Length: 308
Length: 278
Image 1: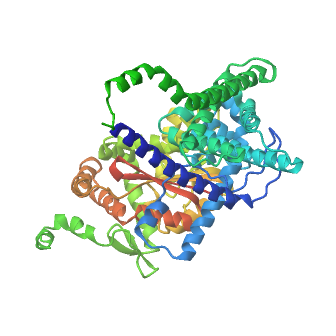
Image 2: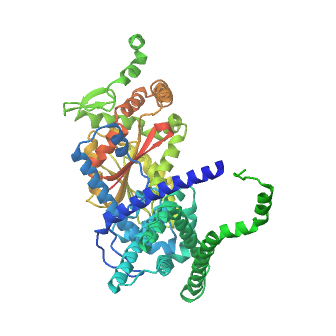
Image 3: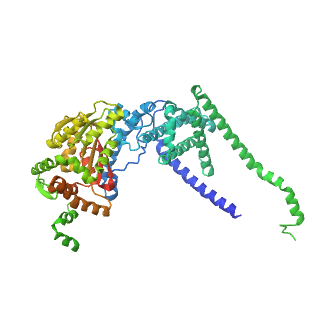
């Protein structure tokens, strides 16, 4: 009745959002599809292109001025160039700082050592207002970018062999590849997870996680425009998070136990999908059978009879 | 307007009535600059500033504590926290006469990084201020280099420091743009420029209170403690003539500094301007 109507309206709203979101995602993917990058191996340090957006929340005098005065096009271009050159230096320092994370953690000390290795003074780490938080966010952005390159490479390989992509194995290999990137920093990873879970950083880390699961499902071939868009990404995010936690305490050689855990969770998910599908198919028949006695009584009593 | 014209009848209110105009503006004539609210020639200003600091050097630290109720110590602590020095940092403390910033730098680097001899150079245009600083360093057994030179013509080679601080000194300089260019020259790539300076209070009600305090109370304190009204009148006036935060940030960018930012302290009484040479 009215409950059904509310539920149907909610589903319709969710479906329309999912449709808009999937259209926007497809448009974004098309815009970057033309960029070509070298194939990256696991653990190799790539040259980071400028597409890696640097997440900081710096406010400076320039921003205050922008809101108050009108700028000419030439001034805007100059500001943009200055921002790009500052970002290039920042990315260089962050890349070098990753070498010191094992010794100093995700901290300003690591940034300072990274700046010195990059050829700048140690005090240049003052450019990062968040300190170690900025380093963690940069690292996960970089990993996600590498992951997308790997996914594109996998698809090209399958297309070259003219094979159809098996969704389950594709997702499994994507999650394994992404988790293997953490292995060099596994000693400092609990600290990183703590930083990413902090309330002031959590919105940014959640955004990165959402983009990552969306990328994986998109390259797996998912073009759903209904409630499944949300459920698929939610399940993958949960899968990734639980496997990551298992990896932190795994002492087996080459993290064998973690990959076995991943395999078991993926088979659980596919089993659950099969069961839920069979419940949907047979559910209405089951309900009718269960209430068949009540239906007989109703017919005898004559309730709901339209013929007189 | 009628209130202001009535105020003008009382000479002691004259500085407040002049506050509404000429805050932070530059003169069209390049030979004329400001010394407080007066106009002087460019050649006269360094001499006049030197005379002011000759008079105040003796009681400089005491007057700082009295005028700011000790808050200047927190401002200077914050400046060193923002700088976050390591053992390889080479600091040039410009206009650092009595050594407040340098001593804090040395103590912090010794404590955090176990560095026995932090590299610090203090430079100031006024030898009397340097003498006060040297005496204080001797009592605390700290070793620094003391150099007497002007901030707009530094006697150091290029790229010889990686941190440059100027605390409450840049508003006394005749050519702020030259000071910034010299700071850029002596910094290494990645070096940081930090300027701690008085600025405009943001809240209008607090601003009126602060103006009254600056012009009515501080010169009186100066007269009572040091017997010097005019120097502390100049102090209050020079704060009003300093460019605004956004103007100064733009001057820093014009000198070549990047990633320029500004942090307000104590409701805007003070600001820390930061820029990097990249």
